[in-house]
Length: 213
Length: 81
Image 1 (cartoon, rainbow over the protein chains, first blue to last red):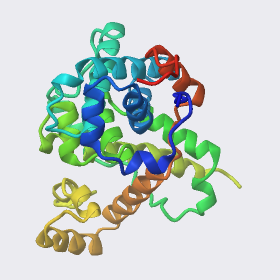
Image 2: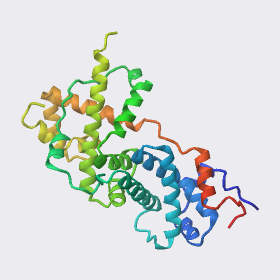
Image 3: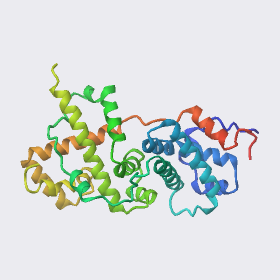
C-alpha cells in the first residue's frame, strides 16, 4: 500500500511512539521512519531556527538542512541524549554557522560574559507593579507584538537558552546538552533572560498605564 | 531595589518562582518581600512576564513548508521504503 508522505501523521501516533524503534528504522533508511521523525520534531526545530535567525524562509532552510544532516549521520547517533535533543543540537549548530557567515562578530552561547554584562543584566530599574492591569491589556495584538519583539531582541547569549528552556520546554540538563554548556550556565542565562524581558515589558506596560484615557 | 539585600536576593528569584529554591532561601525571600515593595513589584511582574511568554501562540511550520521539506528529502515518490 502506498503511503502518502505529504499527509501529516495523526498526533496520537507521534507523541507516544517508541523512540528506539524509530531510531532503528531510521538506521535502516526507512522512508516512513524519516517522515515520522519529521512529523515528530520539525515543528520544534523550526521554532528554534526561527527564533535564532528571525526569518521564516531561512528557518525553513535550516529545518531542511537539519533533517538532511541528521538522516545522513543517524548511524553515529549514540542515544546518550534523546533524538529530539540531538536534532535541536544540529539545528542550533546549523543556524549558528549561518549567523556567523552573516555576522562575523556574532557571539555564540558558549562565550563567557564580560563584567559589564554581569552588571547590566541583573539590576531591575522599572519598579512599577503592572501585573494587575486588566487581563485584556495583556491580550491585545500590540502587547503580543511587543513581547515577540522583546524576545527577538534578547541578547544572543541569552536568547537560545531562553527559547529551548522556556518556549520548547527542554529541561535544564537537555538545554545544556544542546548548547554544550554547563547546567549552571543555563540557569544563570535563563534568569537573566527573564529579568531582561521583565524590564522590557515593564517599560511598555508602565507607559500604557500613563497614557491618557 | 534600595535595600542592601535586594541585589543579593535577586539571584535566587528564578529558583524561588520555579519552586526550586531551598526552604531557607524561600523564607529569607518572603521575609524581605514583606518589607520591600520594590522587590514585591519585581517578583509580581516577573511572574506575569513568565505567564505571558508561556501563553504566547508558537510560530507554526506551514503545511506547504512541510511538503517542501518532504520533497527536498526525495520522499516525493510516495512509493514506500
